[in-house]
Length: 442
Ligand code: PHE
Image 1 (cartoon, protein in one colour):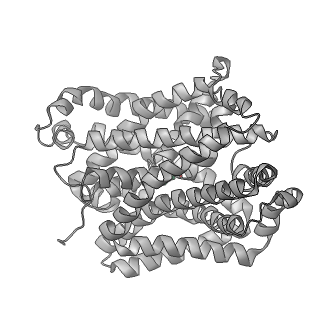
Image 2 (spheres, rainbow, N blue to C red):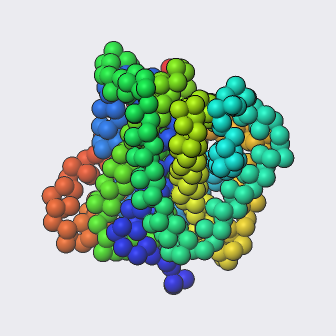
Image 3 (cartoon, rainbow, N blue to C red):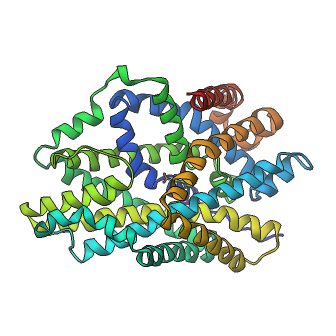
């Protein structure tokens, strides 16, 4: 095949992977889940989950991806030829395309809301009308589909430009900017009068709320947020150079994602409480509550709240794009490497498929909810479980060690290896299975 692209250096790898990880999951789900499940106590178990369960899965996907330098199906074929593991490869080509379809609908909403904030529609004179705007917008099928088309079109454009010129370049420029933006918004939010209650919601530790459900929520959120179980990290890792340290780039990705989620919490919740509204998750939070807050805060200074609104919707749109490109790349890598399509044809094919499913999601909320539940509650966890079983039980231990220590040349990794391997082989699959099954039963 030859000529397969590679990410340039470590910064490029971490920015691309962090770009995939940082997205809507950090902005609209994490802050709410934290408050619902015991504040700081939940953040604590979330961090544990991240390092003890999610990071080993990220390492598993990285080992498979970099060892084979192939797409998800090709990688399974290379490591376990002629076995049913190829179904895992296929599953993880399909699941990110499904996620891409409904994720892009929300990406389209953020295009519209960036436009609304640029044209200062969240104005103090408008406060009462602002929350109703979302219902009016989503009822207009034409507008929603046009925005979806635009979002998917930008995604396809970046993916088509290639791994280095498209994905790497876009993530390298935007991820540092996203961090600056979210810090600026957090400072604004925390200095609003009445913001203290929001801070309490995030940091007050309530250990009585740490029920089994809270553990399941932490696990599901952490997989979704780190883009695990759906082959995106595997595919990105297949573009990582052989001399890169997978443990360092994986840990760097997990820490960036965690930090961004916590910053998003501090950017959003203080403002929500300052305006006296009960917090919610999902579309209501980002497209109703926050615009209402921007409009209301405008009474204290129209310019500053208009600027914050613009920065906020730029943040959401860009964070969503760095994730959507990673979902699209999985299928593009598969179609171009296994099915012989050109990159242009592969990108166009996935674009059209995601557009068709996306339109159904945009027009029917029930399709949207069904696909979201199917992926985030089921396919992601299943994929993550199978990846850890594959690396822990199917692959040779020596091969896994070779990949994580670059042939034994990385001495710290060699010392850490027994712990990492134990987490991959026993801790991760057992905990995921227990939490998954108790979730299905409960
Ligand atoms: N991690 C992304 C987010 O938090 C979502 C995502 C899921 C991206 C699966 C790729 C694959 O928004």
